[in-house]
Length: 240
Image (cartoon, rainbow, N blue to C red):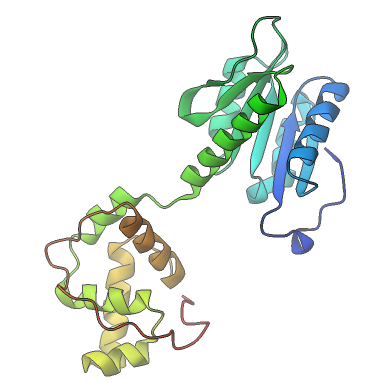
């Protein structure tokens, strides 16, 4: 796998894009790499590899991969590119096809994967990158509908605990506010985590925020009014 620059994850800013260009001749990959770096104003770490080296390249990028660009030619058919794009979870995907001589157009394939000709003008590339970014955001967002359905079995007390967890309150503070023992609060917290299928408090808060963002209805057993909001007790209160 080739990298257009040394990659150091610790030094990577939060808005930097990690991209992988697969397939096509080296000059084709170099052209796409140049375009990506220019569009992201140098904030893109772009890796590239031929089609045969795709497994090693994907393993090298791992979960930090934000965008995959696949060149579809005789070696990698469009169906093969679609299959590979579908297997890369949480990343935007572009399929680039050889120029056809006809009008350059953007086409959205299955599951938000974008297809464009290699010779497409810059505005088409920009629109394709925008669609790919929306796909990445959607794939990385928690499944709000399923979460709300899972939240239905929560009791009224557990909904109160959920509200306070969302405020970043510690078990001790929650126990004090609800006049419960810390041990009882821990049991409620465990039940809420199971009900929302979250692995820890931070994931729980992110999933609940996704439900509220889409305006999902609260389940019948939820509390009618949320407790008064205060600043979180500590920065580490979302730890598992």
